[in-house]
Length: 162
Image 1 (cartoon, rainbow, N blue to C red):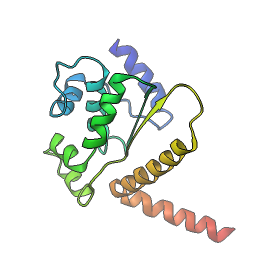
Image 2 (tube, helix red, strand yellow; image 1 turned 180 degrees about the vertical axis):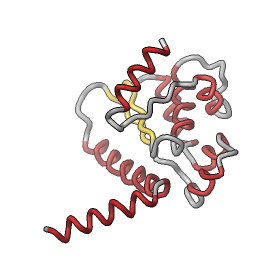
Image 3 (cartoon, rainbow, N blue to C red; image 1 turned 30 degrees about the vertical axis):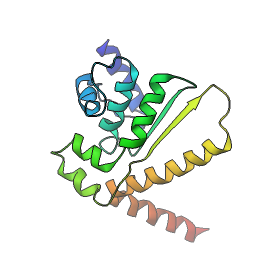
């Protein structure tokens, strides 16, 4: 099973959109434990732990998409709406001094939960996605300030050519 996971992740990593890191369930559960007891079986603890494990460390934000009316998804959503904060991330990774510097002055982390019944998203979800993307970009710029300067120069150069 882990061999298949690694093969799939290595293929998808070629897109540049994911990192081929293996899933570490004990680490995910450890990140969720301050907020949900490990005796809670199912996806809620995994969703909460994965969000806290990945945000800032590997991603610039978390979007949780679940089926309409799914109770584990609603549990995770209600908890993550409260705990996707810089303080909770720093509590989960106390030895990461770089994160402490990057998150200085940040209160909440980019998070969006969406329920879907398969229908097209209404305009309010589109607006929430746009706001999420702006917040994720701001966090990305804090994490990678040299990348931001490079893209700003490229945009300015492109604008000057038009």
